[in-house]
Image (cartoon, rainbow, N blue to C red):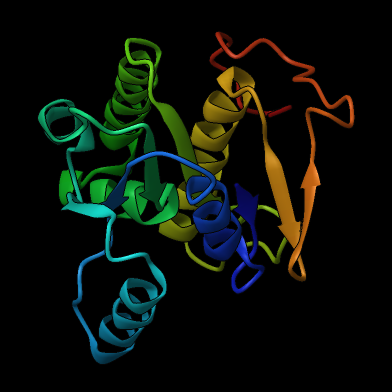
Length: 187
């Protein structure tokens, strides 16, 4: 489920997850300031009490397998924060890019090894203004590549705009590029 800030991504994903079975909610955010604490509190209050929560800001690939036992659905909210956490934790943007793409690939591999339905939430940050800093531009580009990897292998991709969900793959959207290419110029 992709979209801009406050587009309804999390609500849409939670609605999809609530359509059946036992849900594992994977939270990637950390309460580092008052605003984030309030957002986390609002999100927790919205989720059903029956859902299990796994808080993992850096390494969901290591944490998910044992937590996923007996769950029908996994909801990870959100990829945006996970990539940001990794980029800041790993330091050098150039070295971090390959590592983050490898971790995204490992998360996809884990998904394909399970029978569980997965729902990932991420921001589409490439539709706005060009970030003013080099780190901001690197982050935008990297998150765009991660989103493309996930979308290419997903059965469904929803784009949220103003609370409206558009199912891109059902509408015929397909990747038009080779994800194995190193050049990110056209992606």
